[in-house]
Image 1: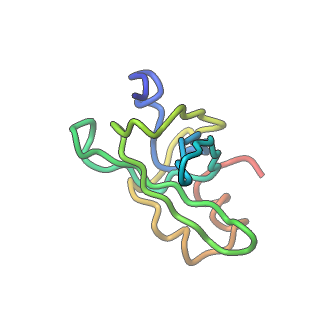
Image 2: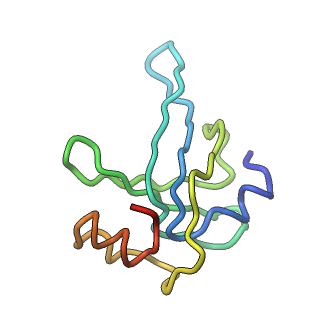
Length: 108
């Protein structure tokens, strides 16, 4: 369960590192996924989610994390923009990394 202080900081445009528990056959391991939050949906109700996008080996990868998932170990906020003009940053899928950082307002 994610603490309320961190939940309030998970907003569109924030750089986050999500540490999740992955089960492979009979083993369990922790995996980190670092990227930009594109969207936060459904507030803090039971079905609430947030979408994280990262570039892995030159390919864009998006993961949707349920907020109440027991598989999420921790969420660390790396940086957060002061103000984002949109609540859903889906345009980041089509523009370059440099252009998206300029539009969101993250440090280069």
